[in-house]
Amino acid sequence: PDGTVKLLDDANGILIGASIEPPHIARTVPFPLGARLVMYTDGLVEGRDRPIDEGIHEAATHLCAIPPHLEPGQVIDSLVAALGATTADDDVAVLVVEHHHPATS
Image (spheres, rainbow, N blue to C red):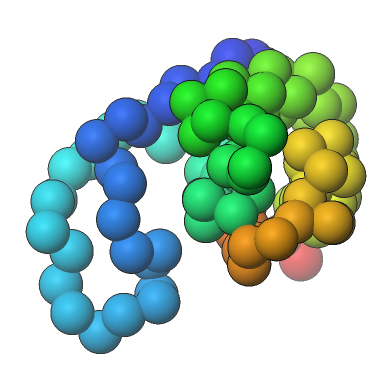
C-alpha cells in the first residue's frame, strides 16, 4: 500500500489455482490492507534479449511507479505494455490479487 515492492524469491512455482496438486512450499507473508499480490509467468519477464533477473527488476521498478488508484486490470495492462510482453515469443499470464475492505451497503 505504500508503493514498495517485495519480491517473494522462494515463491517460484505453479500459479495459484493452476493445478489441483498441493504446492511444494507453504509459506505466509504479511498481506496488509491495500496490498497487491502480482503473480506472472516467465513470459512476462524473460525473453531472448532480456535475462529473467533483469525482467523481474524491470517489473518491480514499474510496479513501484504505478499509481495506487489503478484497478487490477489496469495494473496488468500497464505492466504488460511496459515490459513489451504484447510481442512476446512466450505465453504471458498475469494475476493481480488486491486486499481491500469488503463492499459495504
